[in-house]
Image (cartoon, rainbow, N blue to C red; front, top):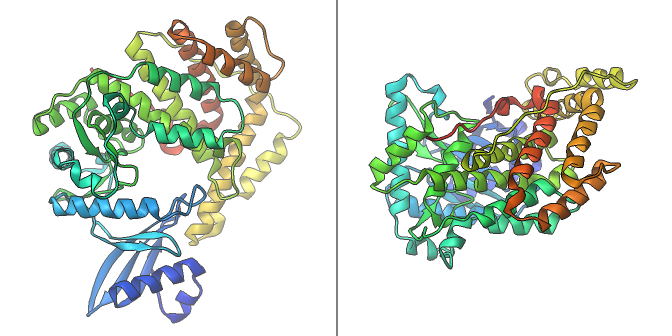
Length: 457
């Protein structure tokens, strides 16, 4: 909700937002007169600067909150935006990076996101063509321009295809506190199945499919924080994971073919499949340490949902590529415990409606209520699901470990010692394991409910 700011209401804002607005005024002149917080997992808001009788709409993109507070990723993103703007790509203008509080100041792009909100199929097709044309333009910019602002050219085609996975794996291992056989299996599979000969390099937006549009067409592209130099097919794979939460509506196989027509580049759907598995795995890699050892500010269920859904969807694409048949487990009968009534009351007490118009308070209550719902489901179904999972583990190990902790340790050792001959077994097992966890999360998965990645062919 937009809030007009006078001296009194501004003084009542959290200190970081007061400092952010003061920095903006020093950079651009004028006076911040209104703002609208964007409650989410990183500090963000839209606000208005009055200057010379006109209102300038702005967007504040903060550092990634509980993950880190460094401004380096924001500075790189601002530099990328400058390159893209110079080449005529529709992007928000960057006004610079604030060190304290850390944030990237951007022009606010008008419009809405997600093509399921287009007026009709004709409007949707126009916006999609404009976006694909803009993406093709980015892919055609000489990579030397991005090397000049600090990006590295991959050493070879294999490194190019591994893309940002290398850095994500490094961070994952630095924060790893317990075995994770699912991640280790998917990492091993990706490394064994890197496509050959992919030496056509482009700058990639990485988390592709993010853009705004209005009734007339595309208004701008968003989010270049994870960009890197690599295989352009990776950006096409990004459409598929984006489609899980912001539907393209148009069949993605058709989207791939349209990109090929607009860009003049061949699109190998098998390579896109590989990048889909690889890119989906980045979510489990990036949130694993928050799932096992969350900080207080973490939106636990959101992160666990990403871990589970993207891990499962990656396995489904992997299975389609290899002709492996998957089978989903059934949900056992509900078995409430003596604690179920107390957990149910907690769910009711954490009602976001109690926050009224306070968006930040509503977000925090919602974050906690989602966790409480997950705990309620775990209390009612968790023991039976865990027993079923250990039964499945016994088929892989040849014996039934007494606990899930021992099962994970033995499974990880087995995964690391195995080759492709056991891939099908592991795909089926980890898919069933993640499906069980997803059943506990189901009521609070929101946009990830029933998420699937249909085959492109």
